[in-house]
Length: 134
Image (cartoon, rainbow, N blue to C red; front, side):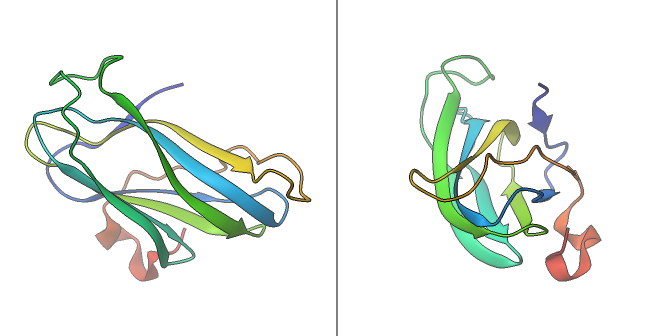
């Protein structure tokens, strides 16, 4: 797959509309946490904040490589078909927002099927999404 990378210093948004069965899921993100900036990421579901963190680890490199790839278990989510999952990010310094993988999996013991594939990815600043919807 391809890495989603923010261009410029403005805030960026990636969103998907969930197409899997209703249930409880874990959301984890694999991203590039470089040492030349402190970017910020937040996650919202249907407009409600569910996680936020700074990309502030010194992982030994200023570029995207095996050392700078980090995995963040962002949240446990209750999702239904049509739920909107949004990733909102702000790049900082020389660290662009680089998102490698979004991992969405049913919680252990949850009575639901496998997570659906991403139906839609948008790379627009939040201002282009009035109301914060998908």
